[in-house]
Image (cartoon, rainbow, N blue to C red):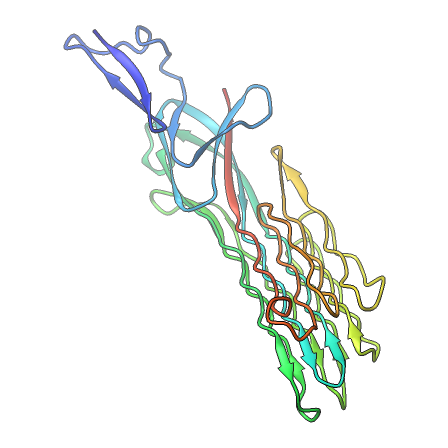
Amino acid sequence: MDSIWFFNQVWYITMPRSGFSAKSAGFTGNSFITSGGTVWNTGVSGYEGRYFTSNGTFTVLNGTRDVEILVISGGSGGGGGAFMSYGIYSGGGGGAAGNRATNTVTCTLGIANVRSLAITVGAGGAGGARGISYNPSLPAQGSQGGTGGTSSVLGSTGTNFGTATGPTGGGGGFSYYFGSKYGGTGASNSNFSGTAGYNAGSNFNGGGGGAGAGSAASAIVTYYIGALGGGATTINNVTFGYGAQGGNYNSRNSSTLVDGSGGAGGSGADDATFGPGFTGYRGAVYLRWKV
């Protein structure tokens, strides 16, 4: 007697010696059966899907569908703050939201290149190191945050079905007793801009905000408070990509743990915890299709 059963996200079919009938097994030849990643409740009536938050393979086990693909890179890291003795505190710039790519690919069991898709998910960029100086003749410079990792979807023969390259990180703060002092610049992405940190001769400088996936960052409102990052966007019912806030002169803001979001800038305080920028948040890949 034939049977069909599901285990560990893979369908298994036991066929009788007389052969297999898709109809007798309870589904038609065009039933779309896949494996890889995590089953995704798309929140949209009539759609099914899978998503990946780490590297993997999307495989078609039966059927043919037009698959809508959303690729999100990792967000970039926040810049490090800069502390100088004699009371000069400059926050780092916020990291930017990840870039994205979209595509629709006809995936089918019968064609190798679209039967198996290699999924790469980019990591968030590292937070920048803090800069410290106790010598008034030597400036303190925070390090730039790290670039967000690239996410991609490739066919089995190497066809590129979507690549999202990560943005560069937020700029480091700068403090110098005998010269310039400013908050780090917030990072930009492919769609929107980050904003500059405070740079008007103050000893207390907030960092600029990082660009979001849905909007540009805000400008500095209060000179010693880091500017707000840009907003997220929603595609295929997935909300992702918050830009990060710049660092305050004496404290570090929190980051948003959402796909492709930037890391907050570090503080200008002389503090090993608050001084470094936050790491950006990893990217993701989403695939959905009509049932």
